[in-house]
Image 1 (spheres, helix red, strand yellow):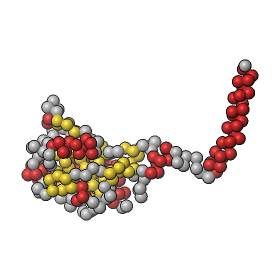
Image 2 (cartoon, rainbow, N blue to C red):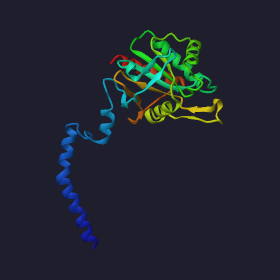
Image 3 (cartoon, rainbow, N blue to C red):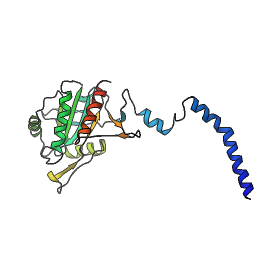
Length: 227
């Protein structure tokens, strides 16, 4: 029985060699070993003119800015822009995020093709007037930085279902709210863009709390502006 098993296995190996090895050798010679495979799709399809990954379309939105003007995603068409979720009375991560966003803004303030959308998660408190005062306190001087407010449920759906960034009310949290400290980067065509890790996986958002995250997003904004 063992001899018959060995003969059967040997026959299978022989058939495999005859049928497939020449094809594999041909693919290697032509540089087609991974063409059409999953890895090839991840590292090639997500790349536009730059080496940044395209995550997908950013969600549409329509909100009110610090000047009581209605601002939508359509107003950012043709611009590279950054989105963050925050609130003005936040005692923890928001001051860091706003300070770092100011560093981003200062690097591109003179570029008419760059913008920022800072969206409050506490619209009951953060009225247009409050947001205007907050912007003044930051020394806002960019050409297109909107501080946006609107209906709370609408904003929460935009954050969680649209951008997949966590926000929520929590009475036990400092300031009464919780949210992500990440920044989303949007290209001129309204796509969420990001860089990839060493394995080719997209790092969808940029850390708005760390110097490295700010360095990376500034580098990638420059790439998108050049496209």
